[in-house]
Length: 285
Image: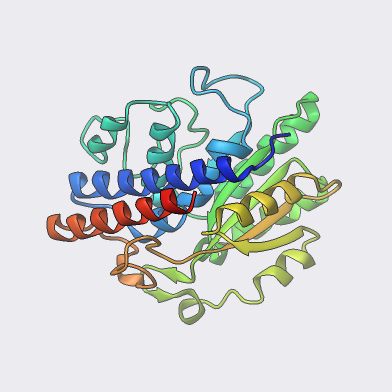
């Protein structure tokens, strides 16, 4: 197992900054798309691709790779930017987001982009798909791990909880769900639209191991994910508390950025803020 040294932590924090810049550039080039969720999950995806997952960009279909499923497909810009920054395709391809005929569609499409495990769009399906993959791994004697990234609002879907029951029944300890707990959806706060709390207790009642952390703290998330992966006999869920729009001051905490991109002027402000944040990381490191 790798050790998260101070040097490695700084590298990951810098890479997460690169991922956020890629998100902003891709969204303004597309002229449409989701901003808040992708930005708040940049640290999580950087940790997964850069430290936690067993994968190989040169062999995206490697049978023994860990599986990463994005259930909330609308935050695809963060997955694309992370993939580009970790060598799956050129970073410049991010500027083709949502273009007709491009590989980087508004929601991930399995057959067009290597290593994208599922086509996602309809919310609530990802955990069920992850349960199937984790159960198949058990049946085949494979040791890869299945990671499923979910939004908090898609916990309003019944299928998600059917999958939670199934994962517990089969004691799928090779399955970790990660909840982007940013408390927003397109119409406002999750707790106003359809309250989810006590979210952790709900998972515990389904016999899942529940862990919680600051999803925008790289070290905290890595440590929590490693503890989750070490659990035996039951699936795990990480409730990753995040700030929607993280890294861009005028977006942070504002649900109206759930489903819109920045304009050119807003993009310039965002990139300047991210460049300044990068300088602070370097100075600390």
